[in-house]
Length: 124
Image 1 (cartoon, rainbow, N blue to C red):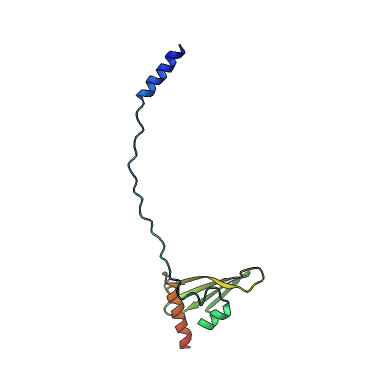
Image 2 (tube, one colour):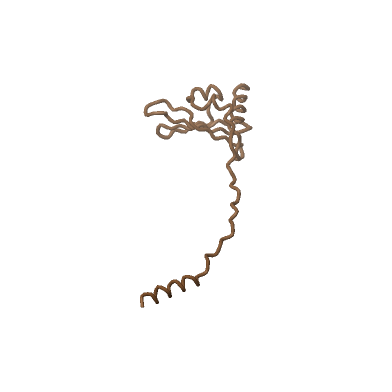
């Protein structure tokens, strides 16, 4: 009797259809965020607020939150936000990140904005 059950199971297993093959899925290309040049940023990144003020003049906005600081410099060409954080507790905050945009809010190359703001300071 056990043999009949085993045979019936094998027969029924043979009747099972093969798994349906799935059509190949083509991945949509991923839009990568625009990259920014790092040239021209070495005079800003890793430096303190005094250095930035020497390069660009008095900031148009100076926001402090805890040990962090955000300096904003504006020109007719662009707006640059410099984010300064202390490298360790109690240390002077240094520029660790920059964000640049056009006055209307669209992205702008950071190095180009640094250059434009440097010209702003030279004109004063």
